[in-house]
Image (cartoon, rainbow, N blue to C red):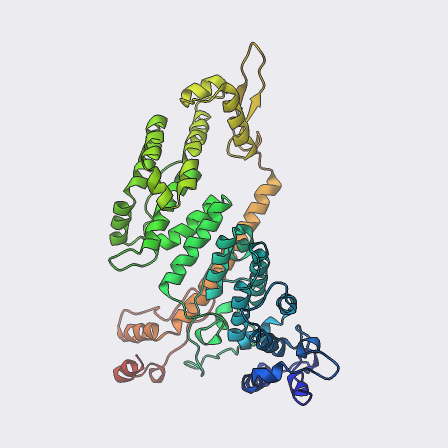
Length: 498
């Protein structure tokens, strides 16, 4: 081990000269990875003079790759995997909080193995949230945007649902998915410069690729499952709007002539969440596959019936429909959502009253709702709506001779839901930041599409057309690549590439 140690710590970002080219950095770190790949695990577990093992000598923030390889070598000796009470568990947590993300881009497969082993940690359920938090931290450290979809996304959200630790997944779920791991090219394409793994990339899709090992091979089903599970996490914390976004992604995903059951489950939940968030049935998204839309309607008919009754405004019939399909709600694991539908019905009914009346007594509201509860329970329900921000109103307490009065606020400039200018300004700033982030990813995606063989084939045909003026232009921030006849080639060359 004493002869191997100097070679392992020879690569240190702190000791590299200023202005080192990416190509030189890339070459040195690849040599280190090649050395570690050829080194038997038994050698990495050997003791070091005066120390226990390599983990006591290496600095995880500087020697990230050797430290990671040593962790995995020691973990392979543990029967049944790592336990939360082991020394390796604490060492893994220490590594995850400080590792060098640029170095780890070159050891994606090993980094993913560590995360997967932590997800299988031998510990009581009470310790599972610690593993989830560590995985989330590692993902955000490697890619702060988590905008490129990986198998780690799916693993994280599954563990959160299993442990019912819903809030731990939010830092990753709140980041939108813009990219999927793509194929890498070993040489320049049409004269464009291919960035190295260690280079500065505008998006994480530049280094999270099919060959990086950071993600397992993904399937179409993985994408659907992630967004369905993510929606379930948002439903658990009652973030209805974000849940709707995730469910719609599943529903509008491309389908042949048969919708998957994952999409059908997403549609069922979307019907219920639409009632909870907007108080009405939501129209089918315009980009939904027509064949899939018909299957959603057939397989989720009972859900659409509840939505139609909700819209009709008959509380007694709504109760009857919910009770009649009790077994279906339980089998679909949607009973919790359905039980909230009637409360939502009453809530939106009260909000609608505010469009007509300036004030109503609590007993009068109970009669209009056909509420079987007492006046005290109705008043308590109104207070909960005001406290949660669903109702912009206030209650004037009554006395023995006069009932309590609910006074509706005329707008958001008054009442409990008042929005100050500062809050409105902050909302606009956040919205502007989201739009800027989205436009950046769209521009990057457009640029990647411009490099595909399909686009070049289309461009070749357009250039031959007399009315193809402006075909070379683009609105993206990346200039269109100027093509010559040599770049485009003939029909035979294009077909051979395909």
